[in-house]
Amino acid sequence: MTRKTTRERILEAALAEFDERGYEATTVAALCHRAGVSNGSFFHAFPSKEAVAAALFLAALAIYHEALIAAVPSETPAVKGVAALVTAHVRWVTRNRPTARFMFLHGQSADASVHRAEQAAANVRFRQGLAAWYEPNIQCGALLAASPELLVSQIIGPAQMFCRAWLSGRSSERPDRHLPTLIACAVRSVVLSSAEPSSKPVRQRRDRVLSPAK
Amino acid sequence: MTRKTTRERILEAALAEFDERGYEATTVAALCHRAGVSNGSFFHAFPSKEAVAAALFLAALAIYHEALIAAVPSETPAVKGVAALVTAHVRWVTRNRPTARFMFLHGQSADASVHRAEQAAANVRFRQGLAAWYEPNIQCGALLAASPELLVSQIIGPAQMFCRAWLSGRSSERPDRHLPTLIACAVRSVVLSSAEPSSKPVRQRRDRVLSPAK
DNA sequence: TAATACTCTAGAGTAATACTCCAATCAGCA
DNA sequence: TGCTGATTGGAGTATTACTCTAGAGTATTA
Image (cartoon, rainbow over all chains, first blue to last red; front, side, top):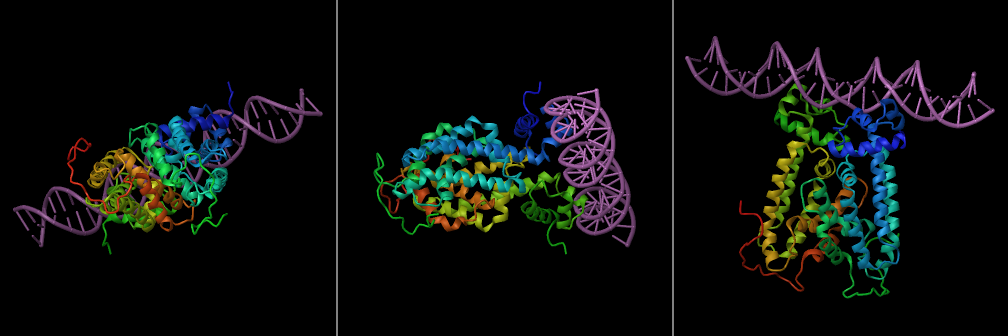
């Protein structure tokens, strides 16, 4: 009967309930019922309802980050990398709709102190994971020399915004339909070389563009 | 003493409390106390705590939309328009931090049925307001021919994502510092013409481009 | 001015619900 | 078997969004 651990069953139930009714509207009682777990067990496994949301959020974030990092191995050229990142984002969102909904729509609001530290750590790991790809490309002049924050925003910002509209139900246009456009725009936005079929690493000095080579 | 109406005082107090503690964490009692209003008055002015959030959200959205629409009068050329939109977004966010925080971070989560209809209407108005600018530019080939949703995502998506990081406290980099980069990227992303110094707005008639002239 | 109709204010009361507490049960181990 | 710590169950508590009813303005008509 108990194939999965209590924590897992609660997390599973929580994802479904949060997705259907929203965080606030779901009661702990409903969570317990759906997970087939008693009140006592619930509060033994998690200190609070919010902690469930936080755990769910961090787990989702980790998987999402991993998917993006995996899309750009360190040797990937600029154009291919940008395309891969945009594709990975859109793919992940469309294939994990409930999780993405929770993460991008409800996730931000339920940010207690628990979250913060771990989320910050996750973000650092994420940027470090991407650094192996973008740093060489920035240094050879193929990619826009901007701070990691800004670079990531430029690459997946539009896809992110478009996906958000779809996730929230505001728009019914599936993001993956527009993947080619999203990729083309992202490439134009941050890939610099005027003509770079097979990116030849050009020695270039970074000029006065912030980010003092962290 | 009571210069402002009860509703206004409640909305004001709500913005501050939501910004400091978050939607859930703020109690109606705290709201009443801060607004100097009794419980009875509160529920006379609003049917529920959520309705306060919804009203706040819609008001903020209207002001934000207006700021963006005002940035691009119908004759504005493509490059200038894109720059103006990005600038308007960043300006509005940095100058209305609490409101922006609520709107972009907490706003989505508290979406009941009330919201939905009005928000959809607001979005339609927004797109129509922008149409006067982008339609001519698309037709004369200066702007990427994408759906309004996609176009808007491309233009302010990166700025949006970057601002979100700042609003949530994840990043401490002020978005307005990076305005030039944000603008340059957005322009490269959606402005097509190979060389268009001072775009001549070409007389054109709207044909089959949605929006049946409401 | 007086009566009336209506809106707004007030705060005690109610129902729902996140969370607590402790006794009962189970799993592993001597 | 008996012991120990982890897990479970569910009744109990405190908080809180919301209701209800009565009273205080306020404008309108006679």
